[in-house]
Every structure is written in structure tokens, then in C-alpha cells.
Image (cartoon, rainbow, N blue to C red; front, side):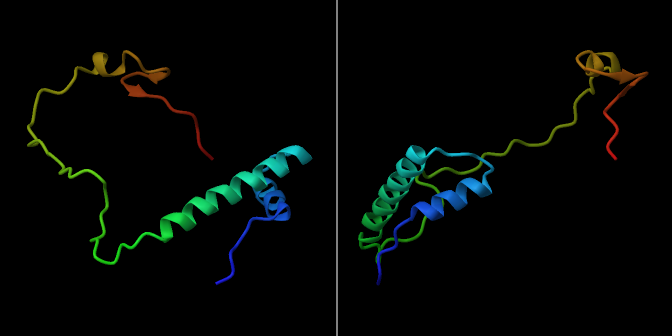
Length: 97
């Protein structure tokens, strides 16, 4: 398999997609950094994981859900006291066209 490297032209394309301008020095620097990152992934790919089950999280965590309990609602004034804009007993939001 041919080893893939990021070229300066590809860095320029990424910068164009991100709408950022890079100096020639930054292009060289990012090209080098991207290629080092790819090299780290190559090293990870060398690890034998054949007998390792896939995981979704490195820690054995389980969601702990609390029971839904109906409580007293906030009074309208309490709910609206920090609203940046309001109209009567309602939150007022900007118009979206």
C-alpha cells in the first residue's frame, strides 16, 4: 500500500474550504504537522486488535436516569425574570424569515 502524504496543494485547498488565508510559512508548517498526524495514525494501525472487542467509550459508564417527577411549575414572573426581551407573559424572540 502506498503511503499517503498531505501535499502543500492539499493544505491550500483545506484553507480555501475553511475560508482562511495562510502565509507560505504557515502552509509549510501545516503540511508538516498534518503529515506527522498521519504518521501517528499509521502507528496506531500497526497495533494488533484482532482479539479486542470494539468499545464506544474507554470508561465503563452507564447512564443513570432519574425518575420523572411532576413538580410545581415556576411562576410566570420567575420564569421570565431573566428574559432579554419579553412581551406580556411571553418570551420575545427575533423574527426569523
